[in-house]
Image (spheres, rainbow, N blue to C red):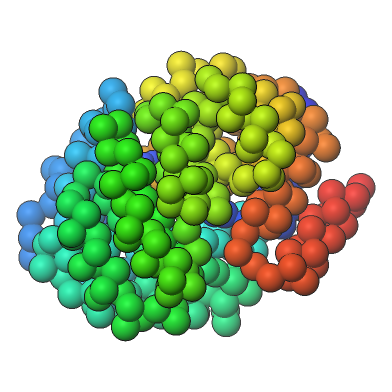
Length: 340
Ligand code: ADE
Ligand code: ZN
């Protein structure tokens, strides 16, 4: 589909799930400034324009430096509520019906914000979103792979109190040099608590990290995974085992994981029979929320209507919803796609 307006309204009307979005990555500069001011702390940038000008990244680490610095404005339960609520209302406007957002507890604990503060704000926003916007959710806490394993273990122990409200664990932050095997025991512990497991792998790290996330962490989904294409045997395995991959087109271009949208591997991944989904990752930094990611990828890669519908269906199939909810959402995607 090449007509941008028609494409955008088609994507917008399809029900969609978002499975790879960092709540901290939805912190728009306007909200960051408001929060910094009300907390009486110096803002991470002098103006909105300066923030936006600074959002040009060389690689994952140069982004993470800005992301953690901006995240540092978040202090109170209200801050976390406002952050999550702003994302959820935008998601509702884009007909996102289900979300499985990430948050980074260690980033906040390291600044002295207690677990009970940020989790309360996030959970209240998720509850309100279900009641007022009809968006269901499963929350995922990520371990920072560039922090110590001991720190991850302590964080999991703290999270245990809120275990019934946290659906799973993930692994994010700087990837290269921090292989999945470091976190094998922590993930095993989370599995023993009945938590789902996902992991960022194959974003900047090699395809071996994708295989290690599956084999050693028991990851049920791979976040990014775009570098899997460098290993045909791995691609064959991912297709055979129907391993979901949460792909983030705008993020990959902004962080120079791929040189351009036209060269993004999303279409090749679909052609290889992989269970791929489209997601926004850190939309406040990368120039678009979920609909924009679908639209720019579809335009650059000339995706067909059927491929776009498959991506929307996959977003529910790859979720942690139960089978009957997945089937109902997939049915709703097909019904919306069939409208004239
Ligand atoms: N944390 C936030 N966004 C991330 C990304 N794209 N990769 C790794 N860690 C992240
Ligand atoms: Zn991510």
